[in-house]
Image (cartoon, rainbow, N blue to C red; front, side, top):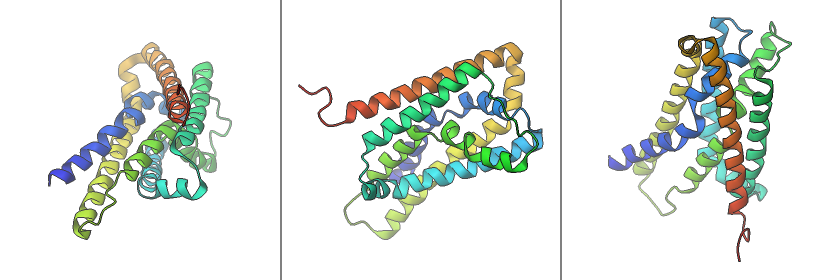
Length: 216
């Protein structure tokens, strides 16, 4: 039972600071300003589902996919850091990205994956953490029931983190309303800056993890 609880807490605690649903909520609201509340709630649900699928695949098969293509985790972090840094810089400069397809249902569906699910909600940092967690699963032979319990608890951790995302995104307008117009503008810029910093940190971690880098 302790292993099951520890696995759940490990997955949730490792992903929550990087996913940062509270910090991403103002950005989500800005990017979906053309949507009605009902459409925004629907988008929040699709983002939560998309994010869960991404993290689930990263956790259980991510390390095998990287190994198949010969991609190392540091390289994944470098590429992901560049993507997040670019996205954060764009948001920091533009403040409120333009959306010329405000009434297009098809555009809203595509937005649910890019950029709302990836890289805003589930960025390369979250994916690399999920891959790293999945690669640490026991290699030795285990009882199938015990292995299944650990997998179920890890999956429950993913469900919990995406449920948190859904709640924060669904309540994004209320969060911003509490902050006020000026406060939400400050929070938007601050969140974009934090996203930029996260991208640079992921990039730096990837570079620092490369073999031979900074070695004497």
